[in-house]
Structure formats: C-alpha cells, structure tokens
Length: 430
Image 1 (tube, one colour):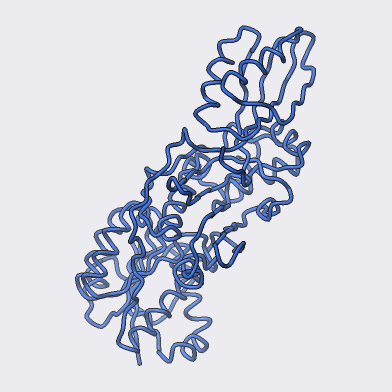
Image 2 (cartoon, helix red, strand yellow; image 1 turned 120 degrees about the vertical axis):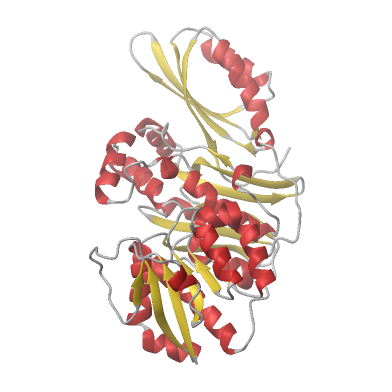
C-alpha cells in the first residue's frame, strides 16, 4: 500500500522528519507494510539551502499540499498558532489525517482540532508536541491507560534545565549562563517563553489533560520562571541535600486538579534531581503501576522527527486496516481546578535582615501567627550589621504563607525578601 505525505514547514524539525523517513525507509516499510512517500512540502523560502533533498514537490502554495487528492497524511511543523490552525482544519476538512508537533496550538486549540478530526473521521496525532523524542503521550493514552494517574512531574524545558544545571555545577550566575545558552543555540534571542515558564506550561496543559482525562487550558496553569534563581539559592539548596529545577507539576487530588510550573527544590534522592543539561524527563505515578519515568532529548531535529514519524506510522497502520484511532480525545471528565492559594508544600525563604537580637524570634512569631513553623534555619553574616537568613518551613498552604510574608514585609528589621521557592515532594494534607 502506498501512502503519500505532505509536510507543512521545512525548518529544523521538518528536515528531521524527512531525514528519518529517508534513512529508515526500509525498516518503516517492513513495520507498517506500507510504502510511505513524501509527495509535497510547503516552505516559505524556496531558495534557501537545506540539509535534505528528494523526489518531492517543494512549493510555497499551501493548496498544492492541503488540497492534493493523493496526499493521505499532512505533517504540520510550522509552529505558531496561525496559519497552522487554519491549515490543519482545512486538511481535516479535505479528508487528510494530521500529525503535528505544535505545542502552542494543541495547548490552546487542542479541543477544537480533536473535535474537527473526530467529525471528519480522521486521525490527529501530536506525540512530538511534548518531550521531543520521549514517547510520553502514547504512554499516557495507551500503555498507562489502565491506571488512575495521581502525580505527573516533569522537567520539560531543556533551556532552563541547561541553565540551572550549569549554575549549580559551576557556581555561575543566571545572566552569564543564559548568554552562553543563547550562543550555543539552546535559548532564543528572546528567551522569555523558556525562562518565564510558558513553554513548560503549554506542555503541562497537554499532559495534564491526557493524564487526568479532564481538559486543562493554558490559562489554568500557575506559572513562575527561573530569573530570580541565584547561585546563592543553589548553594543553600545543596547544603539542604537538594537541587533546584524548573518543574512542571500536575496532581490529581480529592479536591481537584493542581497544575503549576515553577522553580522547585528537589531532594537529591528524587529521580528527577539527576536529570541535567538539555535533557527532559517526565515522572508519572499511577495507582496500579506505581512510579515510572520517561527520559530523553526533549528537542532537536532527529529526536522530534522520530516522534513525528512514529505518529505517521500509526496512521499508516490505521489506513491499511481501514480504521482510525479510537482515542483521539481522552477528556471525558470535568474535574475542578485547585486555586494556587490551596497549593500545599514546604517553602524556602531567603531574607536579608538587620543583625540584631530578637529578629529571628520575631520572624518565628510572625509565621506562627499564620500557623506556619520552621523545619530548619540557616543564618550567615552579610556585612557588619546584616545577616542572611534562610527559613525552611514545614508544609503549609500557599495562602497562609502569603499572609505570613505580608507581615514579614512590614517588619522594619527585614531589609529584603530575596527569594521564595517551593519544595516538591509528597506531603500529607493537613
């Protein structure tokens, strides 16, 4: 059976798709019993140099790909919301199956696109939208579908993981490592999507929707970036037997779903603590399977191309058997979302205070009035009349912590609150 493919976009990821299809063509044909052929590729610039070539039409006219009656599968690797959304809807309307790597689009318009695919009786796959080459979406939809997923924690942005790893291992400051990441191509010239946590939030919205079978929108995710993390914070974390990662956290609890992205202090014993550099990992806990972890390269031409081609092969098998996926959309529940004030965790608080008697005792009293106690305290001299204090609280609700911090800010002996970072480990609710 011959199956023809149209690709929208021939940038880094598009070239990776072509390369994987070409270099593994024999194995792909054996595994699918189909001959997969690239028929046409849409690219805005027809004259720039590329790392791939082949016997396909290269065009800057969308209709030559979207409306070609011979094309069975459309692969969207353009990125961005528009025109990708319009192109995918058009492809589905014209009877095409679709594979996309577009996390922005799936996070914001996934419901609309999946409904359109279902109405058209076509497949829409998006494995590469989260975790690059890590097969996490298929695992959640299929291999772990017998479980109730209770926890999902992920390091799902390679740029921030590279920055925090270098800061921790080399004792360098954030701005210096960010500049290096930009030079190496790990960070964009405008890195805000990565360092402000938005990239990870988009991916978490997708993962949480699948894991908990309830729609989680991008705006539902609490987001905080890494720009306030200093080498001092990483040094203190090491003293506490921990490290700091930008963590995507999703939990299914009795009172609802909790979804958040923020820097988190992780014990070195946690499996995610050893995930360094540009690597990604997703740690999943199910009620039957227990703890599992998926690890690999979260971006790049060939890893992402690997995930996309795997989706193409799934669709090819469906076409050969004259069927379609029965699990396009898994959001059959409507679970409530927890407010950030109800998040429950321990906190690291770094303050600069006047080095005078009774300051620590007063701080303890201010926190006690919010029903918060300390698990540990670190104090170091900073100059003649100043001290730096790190307070590690026992687990508490975030709303209570904010009340305590309001009182601390008003205390005249406190010169600054330099950082507040959440811990991440399992705590019993109280």
